Length: 206
Image (cartoon, rainbow, N blue to C red):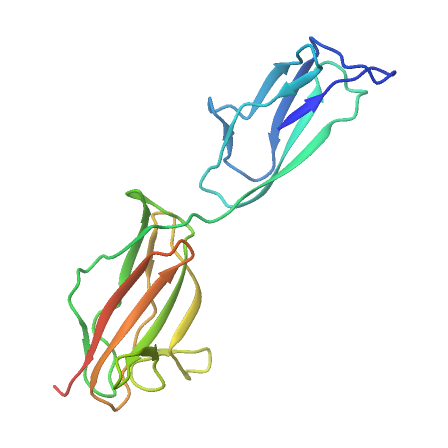
């Protein structure tokens, strides 16, 4: 972000100290870890702030540009936003073994996944979980029956949206239940960044 210092006649003014200050509920910082830096304008009156580094906290914050030592000069404010990270990998913490249940029962293991980007955890990654069935022609669609999550009124739900990972990039899904059918389904998890994880769901009589 850049500002230009001008005098009352609109002419650019050099050697003016401009202080850039980060304000708001954020852990974003300038490249050297500081929350405020001072930059001197050049010949064209321009002062450019150093690069900002987003922190772990999402949301909006403000960067104010003020003329150092001149409180009578109104500051300029820039709004910045830190959004959730885009994961490139989803991995099951429990390995790739199928999740199993008996008809009418609860799956014994709750799935826990970790979202990463280039190997680093992605806090706040948004996930969608869908129970998928395979048709006779090989196409896969959201299941109309079979394993399910419970909705707010305990109704069967086979697609969950708005799931987010914690500060370590980890998410434990809600419990999964089986209806009276036996067979094999898939639980597909996707992220905004395009990462996908598919886990087999197996329902068989004990």
